[in-house]
Image (cartoon, rainbow, N blue to C red; front, side):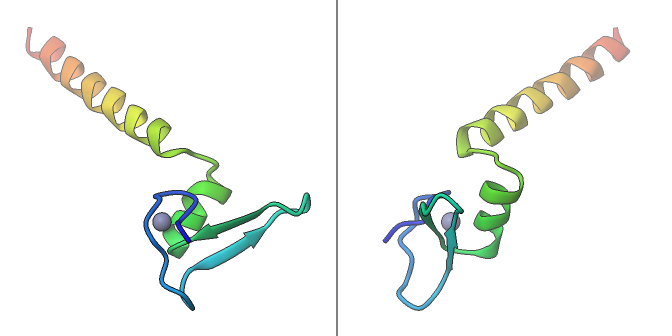
Length: 67
Ligand SMILES: [Zn+2]
């Protein structure tokens, strides 16, 4: 089976199985993926976009402070 967050293959006997009250079951390869997906409710793409925009914002701030 694959991790619900990072899509990595999970070795049998490892990882985390998370069962929602609705009965939906999700598997995670590590506690990190579990925390990021369940506790922070962030998807891979959203994290990537957030990092990208943060990097751009800091770069723009540096440029504007120099000019
Ligand atoms: Zn994972």
